[in-house]
Image (tube, rainbow, N blue to C red; front, side, top):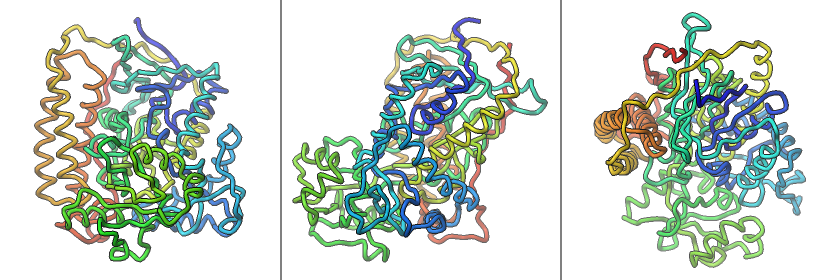
Length: 542
């Protein structure tokens, strides 16, 4: 057996969830962290808003819970919501301890906290702790500096997991994960990474859509791998579209933080008139599903390419203090947000469904965990409330750490695993197939499975994805794998799961809105949409 590496824990993904867990585990065990690109290149780095937590004496755990449950459209698990919200303060304290520099409060008028707190959509209080408008960047770079210094953490940048390795030899009828096959993108060879525990921290699947706020790495890899291994996947019809991404030919996927609306920014049409008052009494601070649908409706009604977000009533000094990165980025595109409104459109932003896990982050497969956006914990329900996502990362990283540390006392020897076999494949001379199929999936997902859906469009999308999946699988079986091919294969799996989930939910709720079933139906529609591949556990052991 050559080209095989062994660790106590293999963490696939290097965002807030993955690096937090690595840092906690490394004092007790040998940890490997895989990153598809550079270590910090993921969704966490681009998160602007912050982390939601009850830090003000006028706020309460009960209020944070109620806001989350209300936003979640009746599908949140109340026990999980309480579990997460009660651990928010502990998570913030840990982040401060490792050196995250949150913005301090210089005005006690709105808060009794020592930190400046934003208010975002769905929240009834100011409870978003942040580092100006680049919270994710500050958190991710702080975590990066820590993990790079730790002797027990081995970092593998530009490494892409191909598939999980499972065996069913240890316990009859039990499927156990013992690692993953991993492509070294630079050396172009596949290695076996053996591990007593494997953690999916791969983030979401925003790149399944043509327009997204997510970086290129968010191709649903963890969800697809877990599905192929036999895990249950829940509620993938609930894809959150962020209402306000910058609309500009030179701006690939730049997010305009919800915190601007928290500070009074108004959504307006080309003629300067506001419109959110026609859709919800909370206006700009309604939950994201409502705001995104309102913008989508106005754009389609008027035939406009975008709407506008106006914060020009605030002083340039205020804007520079609270939103320096957004302001400077827009200024580079000749948009002075202190004087003129920002052109914005909705874009796919967050995957509310995912791999089903419990409070410990455990999946259906023994020794396989999932934490962060890749997972479905029950926290977000039918619609994620702003800034609960980073909070979920830290809470579940900590609970997974506690469970892994406790269970590591039971030791066992990992069996030998077969090396990756590519003896019957060749190099591809048709890479255009990959790029064409990638573009086609993302375009029909946007057109047919977007903010507003119909059964006919979903059926059309389902027909297309079946054909494309067949093409992709044939291609995958004949040619040596590349990073692009792995991502396309995963993207196709996730697209099919989203479409099938949307077809199964014959109601409108939260982020899933269909004109054929425009109201919610608590009586006849199951609470959770669960998709599972019916397979027997594979035995890769020699």
